[in-house]
Image (cartoon, rainbow, N blue to C red; front, side, top):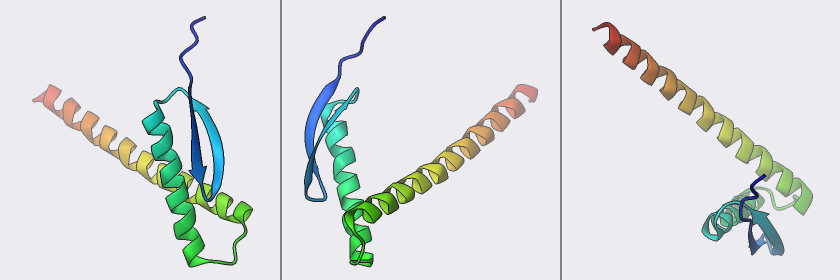
Length: 91
């Protein structure tokens, strides 16, 4: 079995350091951490009474919601593309 190279990076999210290990390059890991940090700070600005745990959960919920919306758009584009290809096959 081939084991892919793991990347390790220490990032700062909402004032805490985390070591992230993954298969992505360091730039990708840091970009993800930066976006999570930014989203947590945005949500905190809207509701300053949230503790860190609730803030993290709301950030995760928002991220998954955004992901699901993008996935729906992507699938709709794939369907439209396939329909266009199928139509060209008949022309």
